[in-house]
Every structure is written in C-alpha cells, then in structure tokens.
Length: 123
Image (tube, rainbow, N blue to C red; front, side, top):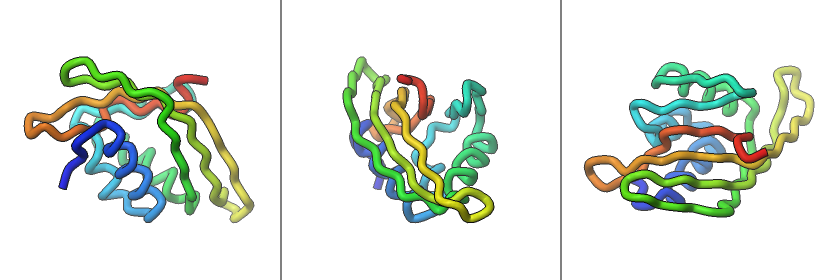
C-alpha cells in the first residue's frame, strides 16, 4: 500500500520513524530524494537512509502537524510543525522541534513520495 496523498506520505514516515523502522521510512522517499540537515543537503538513497538512521537512533517519539499542503500537478509543497522527544547518544533526554518545508512528488502509479525533506525549512 502506498501513500495516496502528500499528507498520508507524511503520516507513513512519522509512523515508521516512531516504530524505528528505517526501511519503511525510506520506502516513502523518492529515488531522487534529498534531506536537509542543518542547512546541508544529503541527496540520494544512501544519504537519506543515513539521516533517517540518525533520527531513529534517538529512540524518537515524533509528532507532526501539517499546516499547509499545496498541490500543483504532480508536485506538493507541505509545511508542518513537528516535535521530537528521545535520547541523545549518552542516554540523556532530547527534545527538538521545528517547522518543516517538504516537497513531494506524485509517482507514476499515483502514489506520493517525499522528494525534499527540510525539517527546519520554515524556521
């Protein structure tokens, strides 16, 4: 089953991260996806996977609330607010939050996948 809307794509990514399932999370990203971390773009499947593994290593509880979703043809621009609680590498409590900007692309089968994920793009 694939995401039928950009919003469902986000929900599937959040669910996979919260279940600590990097394979399921990465499956929601386009083959040409890029993930922005601290202003640095990580492009391609291996780079996106490494970023996802880093998030999942925090043992996260991640919540996301979509603020706006604009669709133009096969492209969607999504802005959202998110909060993450988890653990840093030493096991201390970790809290992060931000306002994301995301670009999603409709696939040939009609499903939606994440193309650009910038967790702090709207900050």
